[in-house]
Image 1 (tube, rainbow, N blue to C red):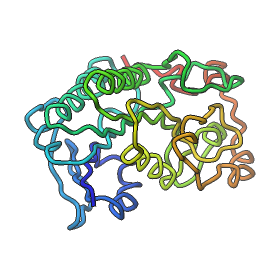
Image 2 (image 1 turned 60 degrees about the horizontal axis):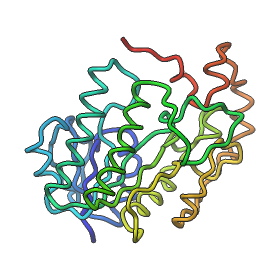
Image 3 (image 1 turned 90 degrees about the horizontal axis):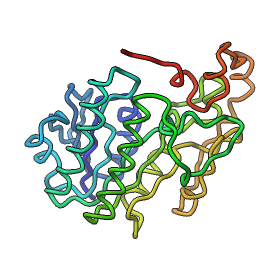
Amino acid sequence: MKTVLLTGAAGGVATLIRPLLRAEYRLRLSDRRPVPDPVPEEEVMDADLDDMEALRKAVAGVDGIVHLGGYSVEADWETIQAANIAGCYNLFEAARLEGVRRIVFASSNHAVGFYPRSETIGVDGQVRPDSRYGLSKAFGEALGALYGHKYGAEVLSIRIGHVGERPVDRRRLAIWLSPRDLVQLVRIGLEHPGIRHEIVYGMSDNARAWWDNGNAFRLGYKPQDRSEDYAEEVLAADDGVSGDDRVDLNQGGPFCVAERI
């Protein structure tokens, strides 16, 4: 089994996918916070994204990295810059210094959140971040391209919609990603030959999607779960109207108005 470093291992997304990942990989778990309920097959190494020495130790000897670490919602610039921009750079640089080429980067739909919901977008258009958080994810994608083309890394950036056991509101019928479909995308990022830097959307088989996920399909992605299976219940509970057109008409939803100063 290959050894894979999972950063941000104490977070909610990592907690959902760890049981599925460790069926296929030896997991090394890293976070600045205590990782909940590690099992004997998992190796835990504390590492803050601002500590290059600790990051290099965490990276050393692994076959690939799944980078979920960083700040996962909108925040003030200092928080986003430290965790998601400087921290992401440190992670990529530690991987380069330790000779680790395979990186799966957890990007976000918020890198393109100011596209209207009336428009179906692919991965080749310009970014339209809806927040400082979204801006940091656009930076991470650009970093993946730099390290791929200049230093020979093999990077998959996944523009994650919303990971959960089921979609919980109208917006998430379009962007939902089940844990097992996320693991399938992660596996593609860790295993698919010939990757330099690719961007895909992290969504399940969603009939109401705003994204063209043809690039993921080209790489072999075959989502197993469908948001439409939950649509009747979700639509009965949520009319999707907030009263603010920036929220209701743009793909990024509430991130299009969120401010943390």
